[in-house]
Length: 258
Length: 259
Image 1 (spheres, one colour):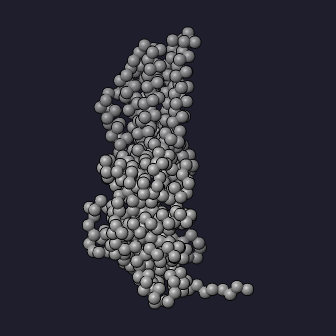
Image 2: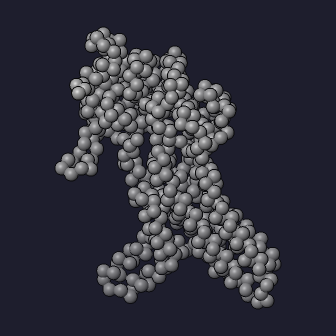
């Protein structure tokens, strides 16, 4: 799966990214979702992309995945502009919620995505077996996805994100809605991918989790990058845990409880 | 091409798992019963009427299947958000359109085959007349016509926001073309300007689906056009399929998809 050659050590590179949407409310012509955003994610690191709801995290991810065209600036994956479909050859994507063909079985879904990546049948079979074991769905692989629980669907999502043995994994709030066991499992998988030298770029509201698994983080608010750096450096600089760092950066003022 | 085939496979799987083809089999059974009842009437010409009715049923049901199936493909992908994991793979939006088209068209082809096999077997055994070449040409032309319809509906599913609006508009357009398409230029000649020009432009712009309707030839045992003409009709149909898919692609590639 490594036929796309990167031009630098950066796996994700965003330079001066700007995304504007046509506003639906009267009086405003455009809504700026992301303003001159620049950062990069280096190969082999786990990068946390943080921000409050509506900060522009999902929009940035949408640009990286080619769902939304940037109004300005540039976004590259492995040195290839995200507008080129080949840029997505080496990535795996796990959406926040499970958006899969529910009439297919998990095995059929994985086979379909393997085919999309051009993985030969024999190799695909091996990968499917391996992933089914990894996400602990071997017993249910022949059942339609519509019969799965939410946790099981999220695990299928993780399996499909890994079908091409990606070098970069983009996870949009991967533990959202999962029980503690499911969260732990996802965390273990991220850690395992990190040990294998994969790059993980993920957004999350679980700051404790981010602090545990991430090498570096970027915090954005109202479409602008507020801070970027190593988790340990930020914690040392602000002399508090990541959650408090986050709250300070987004300008949260605690209200006195009456 | 691999992506297109993979996508088409998913479309076909979805169709038979959603049990849409139940309609097909019920109608096929209805046709079979209708033709099987020929013995109850002592009029030898009754077979023709029954064949006419059966072919009309086949046309109506194939159009219903083609339009409703094609209309929901891309809206369902967007509504269920399955489009996001799909487009996060190295799949272009153009491939999504071509894959959906291929899946729908192949499914329609399968539907037609089932219909016409029953039709041929039952009418052949009753009449002792096996016009296989004629039936083959009719199936082929019917399938090409459905290809134009599927491409048009897919295009409509991207242009119109609501699938129901698309289905209604496409049904009206298809039925309009089938019923009135051949008379438009004659009507145009009887009108003054600018109606004359408008009708003439419409006449030359619309895909003439009625050219693919050769039911009467088969019912009245007339010779169908030679294969060369069928080939030309196929090229004419292919041009419209490509046109509709290009329009769909141009519109779809500009669409912003937000999770």
